[in-house]
Image (cartoon, rainbow, N blue to C red; front, side, top):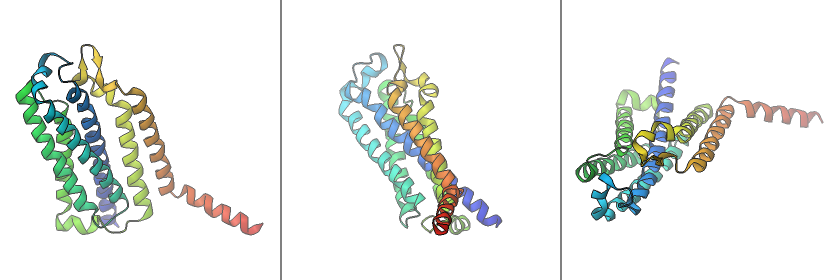
Length: 230
């Protein structure tokens, strides 16, 4: 029982971290769009990247591509698909490598690389975590790719959704320092969209947790009993 408990916790932690990494990667790729499409519009240190606009457009495309892969990886992990682990590691490795290259280029051209650093470090942390999961003593009990109990599936998906929603709702506050240019907080430029996405993710996560707790199952069972009595 103890083994099952810690394995279940590690499985949930892995899926939640994968979800957070996916959100950071997608947001990071989308956020780079502003500079990539208008490198001369922000002045100052950003003017150094203007001659390499094509490279930053490529960063946007590749980063978003790996972000989408990570989103799909979360779905595969939740559904316990056989290729979920391998797909996750490939997506994380690709995102991390892209991020490292982006950091090196940005530091060389504009003397700084935030917020790419945070996205890259998150990808690297999650990648290391997943590689640790491959240790034989952990791999079998965690069981990525093997059928999981429905409550574990619902709990991991629900917590991942809530965590991602919280990021979407609050990112303009804790990323404002690195995204404020000329008095404008560009982390809050998509305020309405992020608020809608954040609350949708949180509501979805809560519903998933209720499903994992059996709330909906109890209601269905009650409905079946009542229909039988009628």
